[in-house]
Image 1 (cartoon, rainbow, N blue to C red):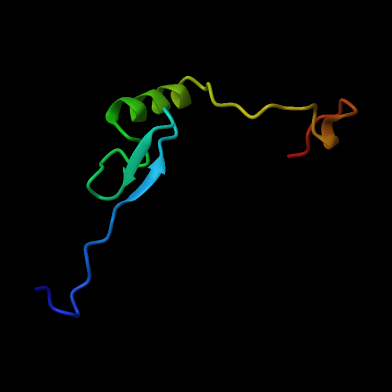
Image 2: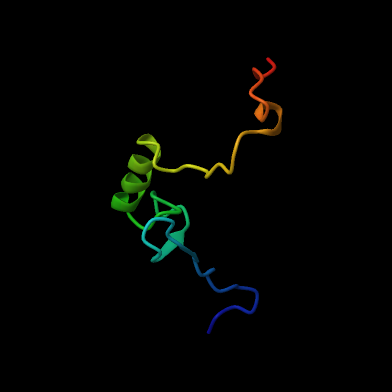
Length: 72
């Protein structure tokens, strides 16, 4: 019988892997967190290093809309 003041071990937090969308354990036991594996971590790093991650631009910033040089 367990002592009354003993708490059960905490369940690990499960998150979505940013690369493959699978489940990933977000805990110190997973050295690749938030990724599920070394492969997913390396794929994400490769995409970042090759500048595949970009924010779409809708046009020039307001201060450059008239063709003027940007202020420095």
